[in-house]
Picture (spheres, rainbow, N blue to C red):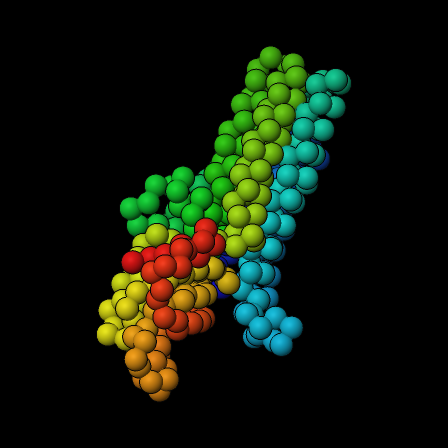
Length: 316
């Protein structure tokens, strides 16, 4: 996993969720509140998700093998996708089921009435600390990008996942507090059920967003427009490259970019000179975009009469 930012945010979220889950379960056992049960399962699911992210980061560090010559960097995407599935099934669907059950058979909160309110207020404080840590660590890499674009375009999945989980947890706690509070005020257990359903819908939406974004990473995303321009400029900066005939990029992992390009070289050059120019071009690319670690450059002679296909767009 990349330098401490993502790991720090994950560990902060994991510790917060383990403590919160325990206190929520105690509150549920004392009060039988469906909102507290939904939030307890939510915190357990979140704790498991953070453990999955840590495991994915660890497995992604394995060295390349003949069977997996480009390494295991995409393990981080796979585990992030599993997180979205866990959040959807264990968190969202369970809360919707529990909310429906409690709506059909509403029960007020008669015992230990102060417990769920106290637990939820404490949980909001702990989740706020975790969310603040995730925001702080994300700001190190987010730059001027909006939060929506950061979640959509981040190549390292851990911080967006933790951000969305913590945001969902905070909003879910507010829903739970509202449901429990109205149940205590009115004595009508359907307020508690409504809070539980709201939590379920929130988790399902967040899980779907996570699944869509991590699916895109799993399918394979190319470099950002800024990195593509930097690579093109680096390629064309040397005398031995006349033009780029076509180029493709692909993230092999959050910190490893593959660059494959067909370049036009002077037709009169010797093979030794072409090899030297390719080596120099690779060095310029790595200097311009350090994560471009796997580079394949194919020398060719540019023939204007040969039209570029859609698969091989010409770049001047």
